[in-house]
Every structure is written in C-alpha cells, then in structure tokens.
Length: 235
Image (cartoon, rainbow, N blue to C red; front, side, top):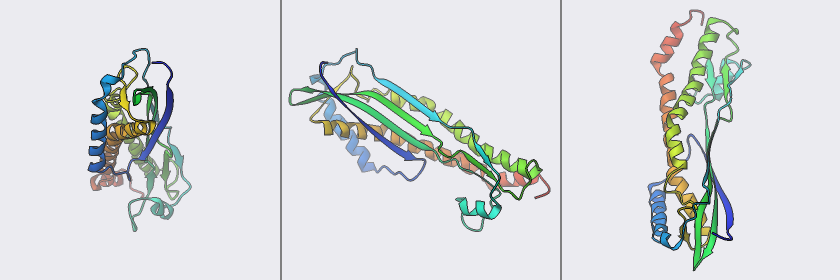
C-alpha cells in the first residue's frame, strides 16, 4: 500500500469504577457505520499482517502474616465493625493497546489496525492471614485455604472468558490491512480506534468484572463462613 504513517492508542480500566453510557456506545456504532460506507475506496493488501497478543499476568500469591485483625479490618472493603481474619487482594487491571497505520487516499486516508493487544494483570496478588493465628494452626490453615479460593476463583473466571477475549482480538469489526476503511484524518482514525475498543474490549472487561465480583461474593456468603467456622474449634 506504499508509504504510510503509524500511531498508537491505549486504554486501561480496573474491575470496577468504569461506566460506559449507552450514548457513548450508540455514538461509536454510528461512527463505524459511516466509515464502512467508504470502505470500497480503500483496496486491501493481504501482505499486511494484523498482529494480536493476549497478555495474562497473574503471579503466584504473596502471603503475609504481619497484620492483626484490627489492621485487616481497616484495609478490608467489608465495612466498619467487621472482624476480618483474612484478606485476599483480587483486584485486576484490564488494558488494551492498538497500533494503527494510515495512507493518504483522495480527500482522506485509508486506515487499518496493525497490532491489537489485550491485557489482564493482577498487580497486588496479596493474601493476609491475621497474625493472631499461629502459622500452621487449624484456624490459620482454614483462613489461608479460604483466601486461596478467592485467588483461584479469579483465575477460573478469566479462563472462562479466554475464548471471548480471543474473539475480540480477531473480530472482523477491526479494520486490517486486508480490510482497511476510509477516514478523513489521523484524528478520525484515533476516534475509530477508541470507539471500537470501547465497544469490543471495554464492554467485555466490564462483564468479566461483574462475573468476578459475583463469584467472589459466593465465597463470602454466610453459609461459606459457617462452614469455615466449623472447620476448627480454637477460634
């Protein structure tokens, strides 16, 4: 496709705290639909690869036994007045990055995505067991097992969504060198990328976050805590 230029754009969100409004998703759809009408003006080149990568970074949990019940209570999201015996930091970070290229054509540019990355990262894989419980004691082992369940649940949920994460990377909605689209400027190309990734990736990240919170909540149910209590006598 001759001489062309390139740029990159990226985004990041955590498992909670990011809300995409219905208006932004509708606007994204309209932008993409308008560009699709001009696709015929941009011939494709099967020799330009679309590189993809899915990065999952979930390290082995780090175990801490230096904080007491009161300190864990202040760190925990359970609310005031809760007696917290153990804690697992299961917050994940989700990110995407796209490198795109464009080539002058007529009154605008032919635009395509050269590389797409999705990433899930566990920045603080920390497990805490209250120091009031002696290492190796029955309560210590029970608390540790419970917090490890939280960590394992996060990994299991991510594995459940792997096919859909890979689908995002290979979606036919992404303009590639073989299927470029027409845009009016480089800024319009950035708008295309952000709109597309908000609709494809960030909406899926949000769904994964909801599934993670629901699965973790089941582990912290009253019934789960009753089973934990019954496991030992010397609380």
